[in-house]
Amino acid sequence: MLEPNFSPFPEIRTERLILRCLNKADAPELLFLRSDDEVMKYIDREKTKTVEEAEAFVEKILQNLDINEGIMWAIALQEAPDTLIGTIGYWRLIKQHYRAELGYMLHPAHWNKGIMKEAVMAAIDYGFKTMNLHSIEAHINPENVASGLVLEKTGFVREAYFREDYFFKGRFIDSAIYSLLNK
Image (cartoon, rainbow, N blue to C red; front, side):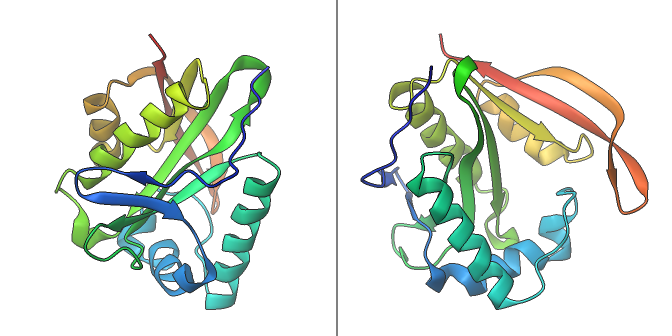
């Protein structure tokens, strides 16, 4: 069975990015991300309303990290390591199957620059080489074409399309499931 250990926290550096531990100082940027209409357009969850809610979210992420139930990195540019521009992480671990679900979001000012692809590649590398995952999945709203393209450019394959399988705000929404195997 998968037995992840996220201590000490695994900071990751790429050509342009630092994937670092979230902290309460990130709450204002998280509030923006998790309340912005553009960012949340295809993330079918309630929006964050206050800095306190964003701080509570950070605390929940850190608690899951402490018990090795998930990991989320703050995405920052190397030239501004203290400024969160997005998040990426494995938030649902299926330990008995060596599988985890990847989730991510990015500030709109950084869209279409290859930043999320770079972050996803780093997370894949960590997931396969360090966590010993056999497979990674990602669930997206199929209307989010940009997210689907990021997944496909990083090697994911769409394995499933579920019609009206998710109920949010009074309507049923489709889901697309992508997967990547550790070869």
